[in-house]
Image 1 (cartoon, rainbow, N blue to C red):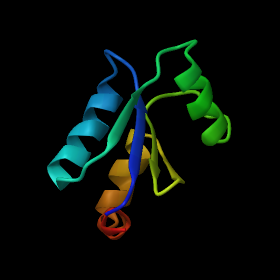
Image 2 (cartoon, one colour):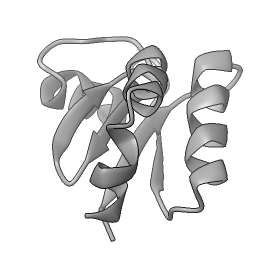
Image 3 (cartoon, rainbow, N blue to C red):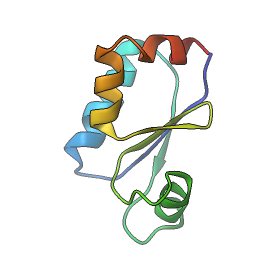
Image 4 (cartoon, rainbow, N blue to C red):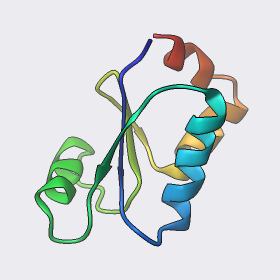
Length: 85
């Protein structure tokens, strides 16, 4: 099983959508709370190559992107193979 990490913050509809998609896939993931100004947000920015928005999603250390990127990857059929590890 793949290691999935998602950086989120409260009241973020994109975060909620990405978390819901991963939940529907039935995979375990680590949600990291990353509000503005937090160490976790700085970590997400550094790991994502400077992207400051949330969510930021990583599968087995590979940066997937945000919610729209995750949804697009799923629609193309590329998400399930990554989740399988």
